[in-house]
Length: 247
Length: 317
Image (cartoon, rainbow over all chains, first blue to last red; front, side, top):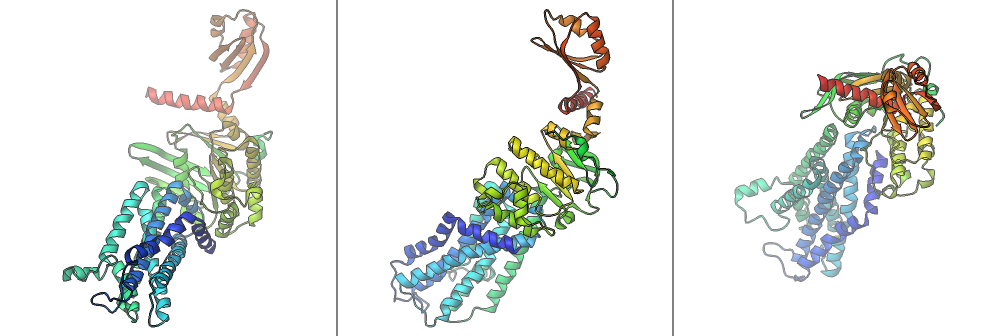
């Protein structure tokens, strides 16, 4: 199983086109949105600047893009080509396949996060009070992206061919908007906000927001994310096995 | 290939528990019955060819055997357990027509993966060597030719000590040399007591390699026996000769036991249910056939004769 993980990571790194876009696209988007913003003016209702807020948002958004969109399409393609069928004839258990896929996704999301941070610090002079915040943010956003990598694997098994992209996009945009990655959810009615609290992207964004304000992430958000990880990874492993029944 | 089927016929076949067992297995896709009440047993050390026209149910049978699909009715057992469990125990190696390969990796890396996943794996270099991949081991998988890809699939299927090897059209895309090397390797595997099941379009391969031939037709077993038995079952023998001067087709048509007649130029080809009587009558006509050959039908002709007869029988019903 370790060989499969290693191989999945190696081949992801070898796919230069995929790496290039996944790693650089969030940073480019960051410059587009926060490039002209003031470095000192605080965003209303917070004691943080726009470049800092957007840095965390874009790092999270970029990490989700890389793992969710990237994984689901690559897996759907692999299924079509029959590689999964071939792999199914080896002694590899379903959880081994899912673990390898999630690990290879994590390899892509880490540099995409770091690049956003580096660009924000260098171009927009984003600084924190304490150095631990940088490390904690990197780790939290990276670890959180694993949840969505598992979701990407599950979608890759659920959908086939032409349906993969639209399905991924609907889930991706839906989750991003509901989770408040694009705009604040404070203006939504309170009953909607009650539901939104349980959306994985909301918990994910909350991790970063807690750290950027100098606090530890809430236990509730961490628990929600772990819960989703179990559900998504379980679904992915189940779909991998089921896929072979009808492949 | 000079080896005859007898090379493969090990003593004491069909002893012990079956490797593969189909019991009244049926599988339909919508209204199409792909496999219909199939009963089939394979035994250790057998080399079995699965023949059948397109749509006969070969691929469906292999899918059911490998647990890639579940039967609608009946039971498929491998080594006395489910296909899934037998695969997890590393007892089966399979090359599928539809099996793809992982891309963006080198041949050696992919073969190493297969070795690492197999509970009784061979050394990577040995697997590469056996599959004839040593020289292209450092090439990227997505840059290979069709025949090379097929060799990689074969390497994946033989990465460890399997007890059953399943091959769907294994030599498609290979040139003659590669094909011979491939079957030499398979013979070694069979000699080590492994059961080999292969579906093929190349009937001469089935004739030369298999010690048992199963002909499928519309999801059922139409014939099951040695290549010689299948040929005998088709009943006819083939007579070929040249004639000088005028060829009286009408007179040739009157020959006894005639099953088919074909004249092209000076050459006459006859299929007869009793070749001895037909040749005797030929001389009785006062003809002088030159370059006379009398032979059994090839497996291909026997195969066509058997499946045609089955189709005609069904149409008559």
